[in-house]
Length: 262
Image (cartoon, rainbow, N blue to C red; front, side, top):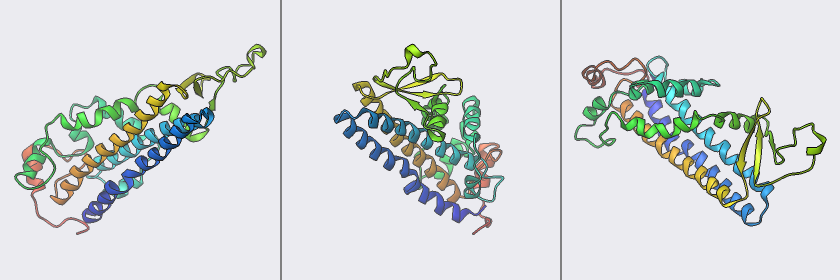
């Protein structure tokens, strides 16, 4: 594993790349507020849909990062694994994570006990409990896996299949007139509709929720990256299958034999 390059890359990802969804979402939210104030609800609809797109994109980026860490024991580097991320991997990974009894092991991190022993009395990540990683990741994974969330994301990303009139896709001539209201609708593969609020106080609350969730996701990502970078610096084993017992993890982590890329 190219350890030093991974440390530098992950530090840059934490400080710069992971901030992109926040920067974009803040700009989208400010534009949404302006459109809402001006009652330009067509524009507001596009902007709130874009906030949904940005949120799920942020979750997918974090998922791709977690997949890369989980493959660290099998790949040349975390960066190499990150660059080989394939479509559909995040959903599969998150489903497996929700079913796992060991979230640290599934993600490819040493156990909480091992990390705490590595930290010792030195400066490093805060002491952990076995439940801490699940508390950190569960809100994101749970929301990502809810029905319609990723499907709506895919429709926005690949086709912008949005309508304001819920009857616009009907061939009934009696329903052909415009019925734009508070919601816009995303058309799914089976012609079912997913609605997104646009113009009421509830819509404004939704836009703020999107922005807050994107900010929170960045904080979660940064926290996990702190642990990963710490493990790389301490030469602790990363990747699925790298954890056996806490004692074995600690012994492996404290080994000072040269690593690839040093």
